[in-house]
Length: 360
Image 1 (cartoon, rainbow, N blue to C red):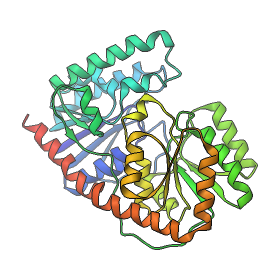
Image 2 (cartoon, rainbow, N blue to C red; image 1 turned 45 degrees about the vertical axis):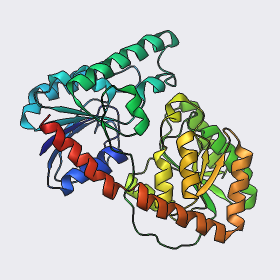
Image 3 (cartoon, rainbow, N blue to C red; image 1 turned 90 degrees about the vertical axis):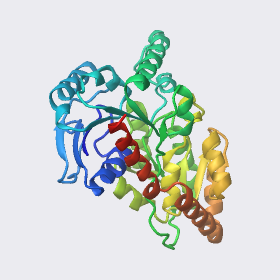
């Protein structure tokens, strides 16, 4: 297959788009061209087999130019491919410009996410949600859909292929615990950043550090993190490509997922939990339904209440004092995710879904 992958929102080195899906295509011998905002993000050298097409980034209220760019590319270049794979809901506005079948990879509950977008005026949120719902209804009539979460199926009338946002699992390696815990992902208030900073203060007297891996798009919050780093409370790595980020996870006392109680998170499984389990480290997560169920099934960590930094700190200190518990929880998580949430298996569903779209 010849595939044109398009995103105007995500980083070119997005874990799902590049490290999982594009790599899966390349490993099967398919031809990939990738349209993304290469000028807007620092990017390591990508696989030389990929044709890179630079496109304007869509961010905040600056979205019109990126959509015009995407429409131009789809109109002029799509005929060179067998299939177009899009990753952003706003690309549905221009997807009809494609001259070949389109697949939309749905990996966000867009309607629920709107309520957390500060750049959208409150008076526009309700009509915008209705517009997105209409777009989604029309999209499943015209295009093939892949869903990253089972619960996303409730938004659509037809049954669509579920391709979970799982991770590639490597063999378990026994190691020693570090005197640090880690958070992996975008750093925002809704994702529990203030709680993370409070946890850092609480565990510091025990000689335990908090490491943060990811971007912070909120200026005020970014300033707080920088102050915490200056004060020795945290180590902030910034954005790190997926493969390098996974190396940072090894040996940590715990991986933290302290998402707050928000509609967009209630129906999704935090991918970072799979990452922590794959690295063989215990998980501490807030009581979101899917996350809590995963931890209970795998016996791989602790579930805490929302915004409860004290409970998080207590669990971290407990793990630091009990190496056998740390090792047991880490092994349990690795074994469970190896058997049930393994991209080495799930990528077959992804490839099959694209092949099915060709003959739809």
